Image 1 (cartoon, one colour):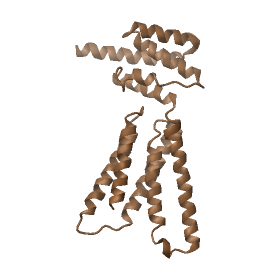
Image 2 (cartoon, one colour; image 1 turned 120 degrees about the horizontal axis):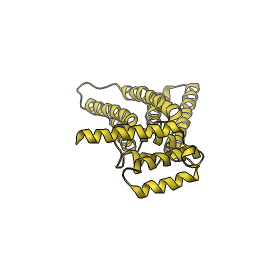
Image 3 (cartoon, helix red, strand yellow; image 1 turned 90 degrees about the vertical axis):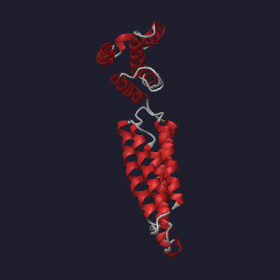
Image 4 (cartoon, one colour; image 1 turned 180 degrees about the vertical axis):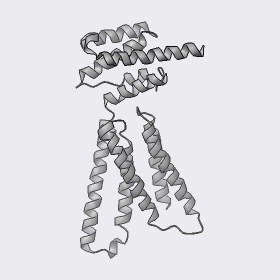
Length: 237
């Protein structure tokens, strides 16, 4: 029981840590919170006068790990808003599967042992892929661009989690249009704060074709959010 509680706790800490460096940290924080809660429940169960069934922790691992692996996989493949929930949840899922399939291992027939081993191996390969896809390949540039736009809506411009920081990460060597959009956004933002940076990004934007290479709707979206931010500042004053 202690091992399972520690596993959930370690995974939750890892998720909390990596979520801080994600453009949309709420996905990782949600999974981490539930894993941490599960860890605390298992720690409490250790000192419970009534012994907890040994199958409870692996079942919890399979259910929670499987659920968040599916959710994380959806965000990784479709929305591209998160790449850490799936691999970390996959570790929980595989641990739960091993805990279940190895239970009463000596009493299983050879066919059952081979079948369980094959199933567990398939999920291990899945986790390896998710780890590579999430922690090695990482977040796509377009996702940082989307989160930068959201930070502008919130009025968060400066700082490590501000819009400027997010747009500075939204590059893609294979997508010049995205790079042009990023430089355009940074130029528009710095136009009101830092003339030197404004001219710097303006020069870089010219390499991709200038303002004509950027969709007018993108420029309008940035300007409208900047105007809202300026209006908010004036109202606060």
